[in-house]
Image (cartoon, rainbow, N blue to C red; front, side, top):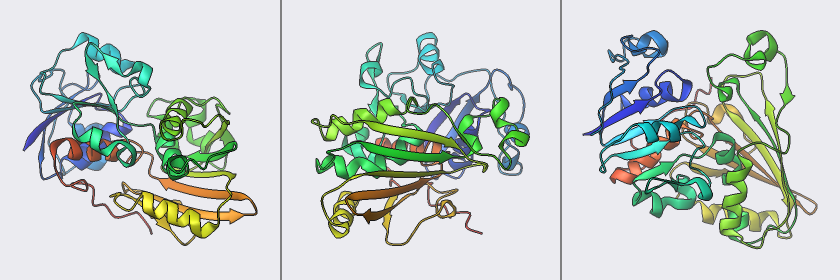
Length: 325
């Protein structure tokens, strides 16, 4: 058994991380750090865990844990690590965007590997520090990776993606209130979303001559969780050639699958899966990608990375059934 610590235990991603780790056969949760909830039962905040755990939030940190998960707001992980020291043997998995870009991946001698297993599995296995990908970035990259790997991206890429309300975190704002979200739909950060940095970085890692634009339109949906992303670009090959490309690329992927049928969000909610569907229209290839933003887009992928680092089965603790009905 390895011992895990969680920093920032009150948010959605931490709640899902706790839910999964208490059922993981190889992990014992050593502490869940939350200054605002220290002394409270975890189930008081994460009420879905009532009866599943008696863990209590702590304001103390064990610097000797085997793995540390940082579930902090963007910009806070770097500050936390600058102010708190951990054993050189402690593996760190950060769920913020602080270390995802190559230019920002180093901190005091620690180099964070970008934790997208379908791209960097072998590097993840050898890593001590992981920058967990963003939720939109995960869904979109898994939709475009095979095209970039085959160097078939020769034109602009257009993306329209919708995320559930949990993508905004637990902090209240005008656009997260039920009265605003219910029966409503809107876009935000058009063409400028922060996950574009990760997406462009990955595409150029696989296809260095890609110079066209990636146009990303993020949307807010009136549902709780999930990401439904559609991506299209010019593609000279046939639909059958595209399917072969994707099937071959993901043949060894534990959680990414290509469907011959149209797909919908209920197939992936509460799972660590990404499901893709391809459609050809004239000279354009349409790729649809669906994930659970809190699992494959955050906590599930973090545990997938942990499994790879410690040599466990990649699917350990992540054999989850979708909330289909």
